[in-house]
Length: 112
Ligand SMILES: Nc1ncnc2c1ncn2[C@@H]1O[C@H](COP(=O)(O)OP(=O)(O)OP(=O)(O)O)[C@@H](O)[C@H]1O
Image (tube, rainbow, N blue to C red):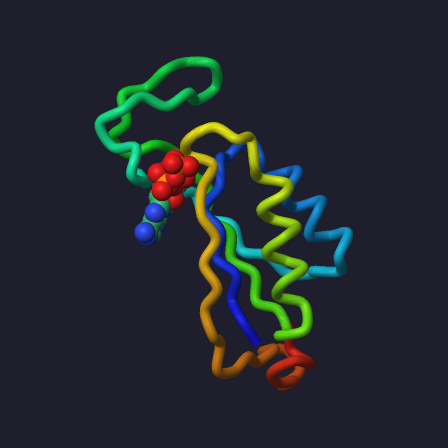
C-alpha cells in the first residue's frame, strides 16, 4: 500500500475528487493547509488576485491505495489539479505499513 499525499489549489478539489472517484478510490482525507513552494518572494494568482507569496491556502489530500492503483491515482490527481501556473502543487508517494478498518477488523488491502 502507498499513501498518495497531494498539495493542490483549493478550487481544484472537486475536480480531483471526481477524478479519483472515477478510478474507484473510495476514501479520501482532506485537510485545509497553508504553504509555499519555491515561488516564495514572488507573486501567485489566487482567485483572480495576485498575492505576494507568504503562506497560501492549499488543500492537502491523502489517499491510501493498493500498489496496483498508485500510478493511476498519481496521474489522475496531477491531470485534474494542473493549471500550468505556479503553485499547482505537489504529489508525494509514501509507503504504508498497515491499515485497519476499525468497525470490522479487516486489514491492509481489505481495509482500504
Ligand atoms: N518540498 C515540499 N515539502 C512539503 N510541501 C511542499 C513542498 N514543496 C511544495 N509544498 C507544498 O505544495 C504547495 C504548492 O507548491 P508549489 O506548486 O508552489 O511548488 P513549486 O516547487 O514552487 O512549484 P511551482 O513552480 O509550480 O510553483 C506549497 O504551498 C506547499 O504547501
